[in-house]
Image 1 (cartoon, rainbow over the protein chains, first blue to last red):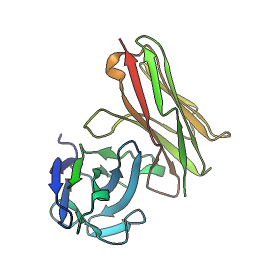
Image 2: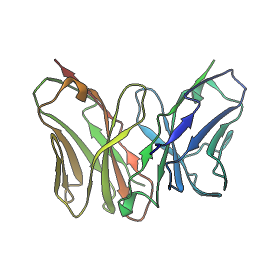
Image 3: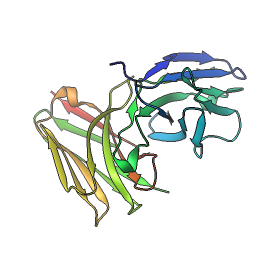
Length: 117
Length: 112
C-alpha cells in the first residue's frame, strides 16, 4: 500500500524561477490538501482540492501560487517567480473522503523541501 | 476560524519519564482531534486521534484526553524512549469544516 507520494523531495530554485511540486494521493483517496511548514513553525493550510475542483484555497497567497488536481495524474502546487521567503517544506496530505469533522484522518506525504537561492 | 495553541514548545525528559503536551482550541464546534509525530526530514505521521464524544483514548504508551468544556486536549506519553524524540503536533477540526488547524508543535527530546 503506497502512501502519499511527493516529488521532488528537494528542489533548489533561483529567485524568479518557477517551482512545481507534485503529489500523488494514497490509493482510493480523492481529497488532497497542501500545507506549508516554515522553520520552527507549524503546518499552515494552503489549499484543499478534489479531483478537478478547488474546494478551499483560503490559505493560498493571492499571487504567484496555484494548485490543481486533474482528473488524471497527480496534484500540482505551482509557485511562479519564487522569492527567498518561499523557502519552506511543502506537505501534501490525502483522505478518502471529506476529512476532519467526520473523523476521517488526513495522511501526509514526506514533503518537498524548496530552497530559493 | 479555529485557533489552536500548543504548549510547551520544547520538552526535555529523561528516558522512562512521562511527557505531557497540552493544546487548547477556540471553536466549540470542533469535534475531531488528531495528533501527529514528525521526525526530522519526514512528514507528520498520525499517532492517535480522539473524537468529541470520547473523553480519553489509549494506545499502548500513548494516551489522549479531551475536556470539551474547557476546550483543551492533551497527549500523554509514558515510559518515554529515545525514539520518541520528535516534534509532535496537535490539530482540531470543526464539525462543519474539513480542514484541520494545527498547533505550532512541541519538540520532545528524550535523553538516554
